[in-house]
Length: 386
Image (tube, rainbow, N blue to C red; front, side, top):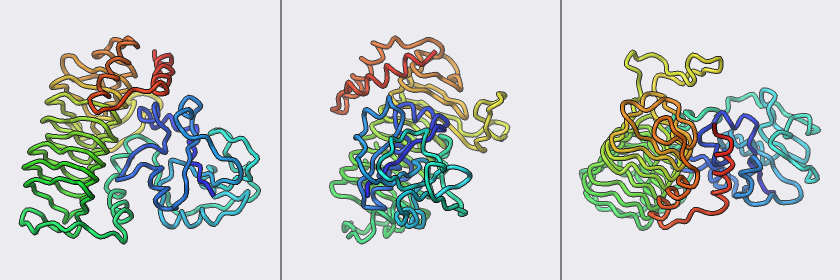
């Protein structure tokens, strides 16, 4: 039975990353949410999200289907319960549908999947791992790299590698086909290290697990990587990185510090760009501090940057900085802590046609094209941005 990962009306709490993607396409750990459900169930997984984003996702199949709240992280116990549900049954926690089986005749939207739509509901009393706020991505990354590593390496033969004194706990290192590794230091005693297909690890890199790279990513010479860090597919990274997620196709190619941070797709951090991840007074970091909807993040939070955004050379980001989609960030002093979508500099608005041209140029650097569907999404966001 096909699985539908559905967004909820609370998806806006995960901005800036859900401006341009469904929750199911957020990468945390080794996999995206969608990839993890596919791996755990062996089923075809579809996505139900906002109408302006639905156009880049496959059409939903007809007939019975399993509806799963996309913000919930799949684990073995929950998957078993969900796969044993029958038609018109649902699992509910705190008044919210975690999963349910549709009879196949309903037209669903992200606002209509509620407990009242199902004939029988079961209460789920165990704790759930959920992506509610964007900082949960880096806060959950350690645990999910570990569980994803077990999932992706199960019953697979590891590539034989030459014994080296520079690698600690090599039994916790998994290297996919095509990976090229020069003289480097890898310590997997504190967590596993997963190197994806065609990864390039240049000379002098120092890596501590848990750590994962996606296909085609490059770690430049002398990179210092602390756990728990995920470098998504086709990223280029250098400098110092700690407890961060780069979702894919983004660059932090030079020196500078990125810590307790999340960077979306198609971003570029100029040479020397760094973020602070701890306040000088060591106090709790808040999102929207001083406003009615302020939320405590914790003691550590660096940069949270949406897709298609870039920073100039030597840009400095303060603790808990939120940078929107398709922004070109440059200026004197620390960047503002809240940068709207389509920001030019620190305060001006990006001209839309110029933004599209610049994004297309950056995509060409990785042999990709900006699609008409992506342009329509960006145009939709631009009209909403004030």
